[in-house]
Length: 113
Length: 109
Image 1 (cartoon, each protein chain N blue to C red):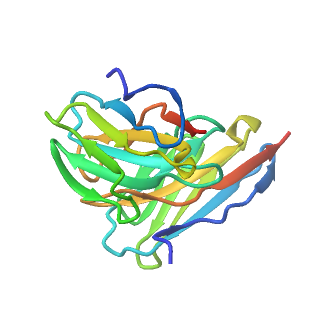
Image 2 (cartoon, each protein chain N blue to C red):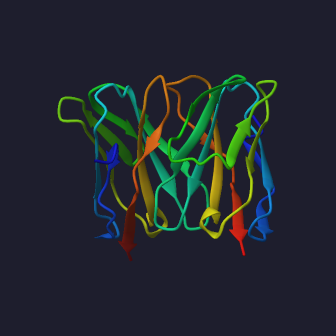
């Protein structure tokens, strides 16, 4: 169990640029979640996968956000045409099954200038 | 109405006291409940999970669940300054896991 790995740890980008984050879950975990967290708030749900299937995407998420998990292993989260309001910590988590606890990675901190 | 609600705090307790953290949830279909601890600038760390009504104890931590009242709590006995952090309550089931905004706990030496 090597834990959930996220890359990069930090990303600074200019408004309007596209960014992509990667998450490698714990190997035997079927579920993979993406959350966004801003200062003083709890993690806000973005989307989750069961194996390679994306089962739910937050209604709050604009079309600029897209996530994939092509082979049911690692996942990517892409944000197109970034805005300053996208600045946040992006957290990835994985779990064995639907009711199992989530295990979080260290997160990717995005700063949009 | 938020799906998971917590008092944001801060909750201040003296060292050695019992800290009591509370959470309510709105989805009666929720099956699983989690408490996470989050230090500033770090990612959430799992402390406890509970699925059935009643109490579940692990060391200094006790989680309590009352599904009829849609209420979850976390008790921390013999609180230590190192327990100072934000505590996140989360609920889930067969679908997504939803988090509250967290309660900031300060343990005063």
